[in-house]
Image (cartoon, rainbow, N blue to C red; front, side):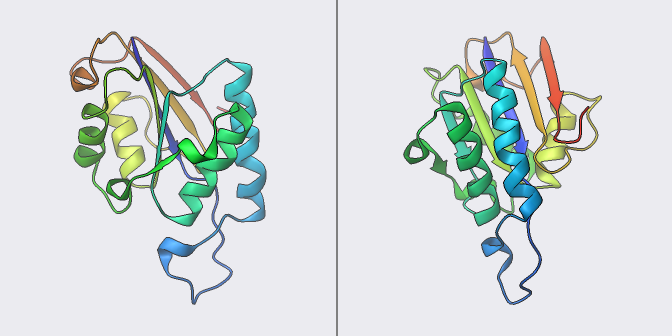
Length: 162
């Protein structure tokens, strides 16, 4: 079984128009929502073996706050440039290239790509709101097989409820 967690970064701040898109921080709401979503995952005993995040400040901050709630070391989060300004097929390629020793993978990324990938894997999901989590369990021995068949388990959660 392989479990994939797709997370859209938490709400970002647009207060400083001089910041480059990549450098935008989380808003106050984002700073509240990310730890809350991490706590919800912890209560469900979800523990990723690998966390990959876009290197954008808002995505990496989201990953760090969720990791803190899960007891996952921040230093083990991998900032992967392929998750910033990506495409759904490129995101799926990242998933499929994951080392099979990892059973649970978390990707923290951006819209519209992360929602498009979520919809491809779980067609009932049309949009991931900020800081939403889509958890898909696949009956697969290898990450290379993810997306070839529909998931056998799907859980969706967002800061404002399902």
